[in-house]
Image 1 (cartoon, chains in turn yellow, cyan, brown, blue):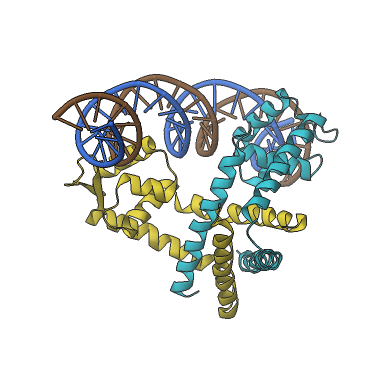
Image 2: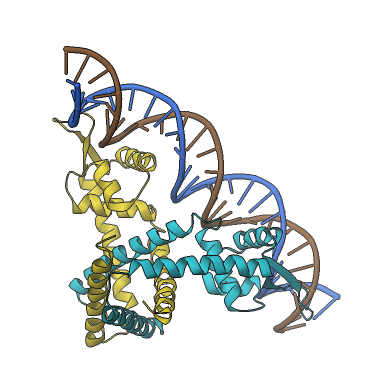
Length: 146
Length: 146
DNA sequence: GGCATATAGTTGACTTTGTCAACTATATTT
DNA sequence: AAATATAGTTGACAAAGTCAACTATATGCC
């Protein structure tokens, strides 16, 4: 990759992470931290995940995660179900309350995205999202063989 | 924006921030935190910035920034120059050492980007970076009237 | 079977990062 | 010249994240 391209990439990163950072900051005037919201997302997304599964999905220290999950359990957001075949592992499931809480965050994030792009026309939205999907594909290809 | 587009946007955000998060994490086995590195970047970029300028550029609490700058000064990375016309403000300048330290971080980031994309062809790199620039333009347009 | 090694998750102790409000000093407004 | 605003500092604190030791169970291998 050429030096100017690297500069553009890094400049884009600063720009993009600043924006996402502001969005996250705003959402997170909710009762959940960014990482907690992400864990709720993953729990909603994949049923019966274990703590180890989550670590594979989000890059978090296992001790830290353990405490977050304990907090979630205490707040009745999740249920822990002991695995039968392996007594070390527990499957995690969002409770009804947990799902409701997740839905709230999810709706708020949707709303935020909608607001963010409210000045773009339909065709601009199309172009934007198409480009994001393409970037993702290209980057996945780039990363694959690491 | 359509619901599927919002989903794609948010999914892209998770993907992209995960990657950038990993890159940052790696760089930051250096002696500087992410925010410190960003402040060094801004100081290198704009000469004679004040603390307030930096707050305008990076979204940081002024107390927190004050301490970081004090730390930089102690480490001889910056010089503080009292403004003549307004005795409340101090202009900040990277020292030679500060510039050297910044260069190290900067080179490491460049290298990281280069490695990240080493499996992409020249034309793929072109497409990728072009799309990033386009996304930035579109998003800036979207945000402009907030 | 029985020992060595690996994995899942928990806990304690700790560091780093970030927040908030009060405060000093100077500048600006009225 | 009094009131208000701004730049930056400081103290006290809270939130986020790290690291290693530990328990319990599982797996590989002789």
